[in-house]
Every structure is written in structure tokens, then in C-alpha cells.
Length: 580
Ligand code: ATP
Ligand code: MG
Image: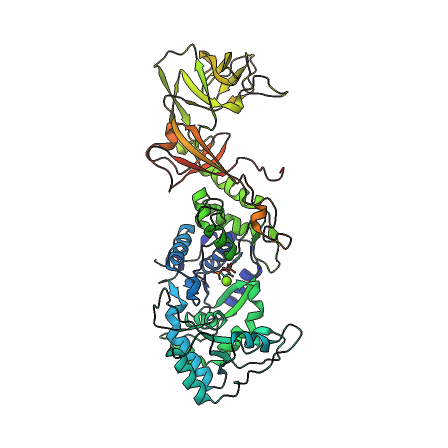
């Protein structure tokens, strides 16, 4: 991937709303704190797919770099091989590229710094800042204390440097079982911050890694790895979410204990003569969205137990699912900009996300007609076998999208819900003896209703008024306009109508014991007998459409076949949430 983002400042930067991180970076640039550089990173752990919450972090990290002519790295924080995989690595890269962001240089992996991390651990041991501990995981927990009780020192805390070095080398050599030893920082077991109570830096794990294979049987912890990786990559602003606030003292402790000359010598900028300044961590609030679960553990559980059809199920809040459903990169980026960045946790209303996608698709999606529940309509004054080819605008406001050809013939299909034999008051569409306009075509009158033996309407026999094509007849009031598809020309399609996955606002909240109890049973409705106008499935058709009066849809890239196109409803035309 090339680094096209570093050439110039982003021209749109002026329009971005200010937030505390943008302000901080502006100040750091003004004071030349990092030599006038801005270098961020997005550090996902490849243990699941990215979700809309990650998009907030991606937009922030890549966004502030771009706005300031800086760089943003993509670094996989891959220190826990038990839960990680190449599938997740590939999906994450794909999602970020899809959003339209270019990472700086090659993709980074924390695991490619394992040699350095090991050497730095040796350095900490030599400085008496780390020791090899033989407490079992249970004993360590017991020694750690609690929020109200201080911890107790490990009996191994004063082991000699020589012995620590030897044991650490033997840990690496694979001589011990998992849990038999760990490497711990020597900080302060009495610290009110539990993260500072001699935290573990290395654990023994006899397990292969997706990047390093069987080279290692000891793996560094997240806290130890993250700060050093940032320093190696000369990150200036290490932006992360609020749960890491209490880890910041450890981040700083590790970097300040290490010899800055040796950090510098292995860093990306080791050949240049810039002032070496350590990276600094700044926290912001996570994105939370109502009616949505974002914890990766829960998302994984839903995939594995078959509650949804994979990570890219269009009901999932994953970027892969949203993409398949029809969300556009622009809508996601606009949403992330509109929720802003702050330090206060709040739950964002789903309607904000829906607003962002409707706004984007309203202007970008061409229009077409699709009948969801077809009812046959026969026009008695149109000859059999005769077809007219109407030229309709692809978009009502954007002429540059051009026109499409919509075939019109004797037998049409309309939606069942657009006809009522016994209309309720105010019903404006077709009724026995009544008139309605066919979208983009003629006014028709319903002359006869054909029912089967059970009284179910089978067919409507109608006549068209041939003088009404594109004309409003004088003195006649025809209020209703309905959509239609020519039966002989339409293409059969399957439509999937999606609704929210949960029927409570906070499915991960304290009062929900099991998310399975709050699943919306109607989150997916499949309609197999729909009929779509030919232009929407023609060669070169747009992937996103507004099917008039029915919503925005996207052709499913995976399940569609030549015989049966499958469309996913991205979103209805109007906000249906507020009324639910
Ligand atoms: P988990 O769900 O297992 O807690 P995670 O979502 O923190 O994991 P990571 O892969 O570590 O997953 O996240 C990568 C980056 O995205 C981190 O910097 C993290 O702070 C950020 N991030 C994760 N969730 C959100 C969110 N909801 N809003 C904003 N940023 C987020
Ligand atoms: Mg995380």
C-alpha cells in the first residue's frame, strides 16, 4: 500500500470540527514537541472482525494524520496467538482499505518486534527492574491484593540479576511448563494502581503464532508490547480508548526505564537526526451504539453459535457486515465525524447512523422499481405482446445519472399492499373503481377484481388512460402513485429485509443476563418472489439502489446468482425507530 496521504495537507481539514485531540495535536505542532511530526497508528488485535466502534478509532487515527500531513501505521497487536488468526488479519486490512485509508508503508506486526522486546526485557532485568517469578497464576492473583488492599511482594522479587537472566533464557528455551514462571516488572506492590503492582511482562505459552510460527514459547503482554512498539515506530500520539487510562503510568514507566539510546537505535527513524521524543498515550471515549453489541467476545459467540450467518452477516455491526448490507465508506466516515471525539462515555442513538447512510444514498443511489409482494394487473386496453419502452430518470435530482429504459406492457405486477378491496379511510392507492398513477407512466382505473374461491385477490383488470403519460390531466384528482414492474420483463429476485438484531436498547447491559433472550425474532425477513425492473440487474448496474417507496438496497455480492439476484435492504426510506 502506498502512502499517498503524506504528500500534502488534507484540503478538507478546515471543515473538521475541533475536538480535544485535534486541539492537542495543533498545540504540539505549534510547540514543535515531536519535531513537528504527527505519526499515529491503528493497533487492532487480530482476534475478530472490525466493528463500527473500531471505525471511530480508524477515522480518528488516520484522520488526524492526514489533516496534518502526517502518517498513520497499521499495526497488528498480535501478542496472544491463542485467539488470533490470519483470517482476521486479512479481513482487517480489507476493511481499512475499503474505508479508503492508506496506512504508512508496510503493515506492521508487534510480533515482528519480538526479538527487540526480548532484548529490552533482558535490559530491564540487568537494571534490576524486572524479575522471574515462580508464583502460579492463582498465587499471583492472591498476592496482587485488591482495590482496597495493597499487594504483597513475590518471594522471588529479590532474585539476583544473574539468576533472573539465566531463568529468563531457560523460559525462552522451552524448559518450563506454562504457568511455571513469568517475567514481571519490579514496580510497587503497594501502588493504588493495580496495573503498577509488578505486572507480568512475559508468559510461557507453548503455542504457535500465526506470524512467527514455533519460534517463541514465551509471549510478551499487551502492556509491555504496546508502548515499545509505539516507540520503535516513532509514534508521536498513541490514541486509545478510556479503559487504558489506568495503564498509562505503566506505558510511561516501561519507556522511561529503558535506555532511550537503545530504543532510538532500533526505531524507524534511527538513521535520521531528529530529536528522539517518546510517544505519549491519550485516551478518548469508546463509541457505543444502542441496540448494538460490540464486545468481540459476544460477536464471536454469535458467529460460532449460528445466531447470525457469519461475521459479515448484514445484521452485524462489523464493517464486513455493514458493507454487505450496503453501507458506504462515506456514510461511515460521516457518522464517525458527527459523533465527535471526547472523554465522556455516552450511547449514540442508532438513528444517527441511519441518518448518515440515508443522506449518502439519497444522493448517490439510482432509482428503480421493485415489487416485493406481487399482485397481477392486466391492462385490457393494451395489446398482448405489445411493449413500450419508457425512458425514466435514474435520479430525480441528478440529471448527470442519465435515464433508464423501463418496459411497459399489458401485464404488470404491483404490490399487494397498494390495493384494498375495502379501503380504510384516507387510503390513496388503488381501490375497486378507483384511479391511481403508475410511477413514470399512465393513470389507470381498476375495473374488475378477480378473486379465488377463498376470496383472495388474484388479479386486477384495469384500463389505462392513454393521454396521461407524463401529463397531468386537467380537473382530475389522482393522488396515489404506485410502483410497478412489467411481468414479462421483470426479473425475479430475492429480497432480505433487515431489522435491528436486538429488541432492547442495551443488549450488553447489566439487566440482560443473556443476549439470546433479547434477540429480535424478525431481524431478517426473506421474500423470495420479488420482481425487479431489468435496469437494476443489467450489466453495469449500480450496486446500491433506491427501490422506490421500499428503501435502499444492495445486491448481495456473495449469494446472488445469475438466475436469482439477492438484494439486502440497507435501510428503509424513513426513520421507523422513533415510532417503535
Ligand atoms: P475487545 O472487544 O476484545 O475489547 P477491542 O475492541 O479493544 O477488543 P482492539 O483490536 O484492541 O479490540 O481495538 C483496536 C483499537 O480500536 C484500539 O485502539 C481500541 O481502543 C479501539 N476501539 C475498540 N473498540 C472501540 C470503540 N467502540 N470505539 C472506539 N474505539 C474502539
Ligand atoms: Mg483491545
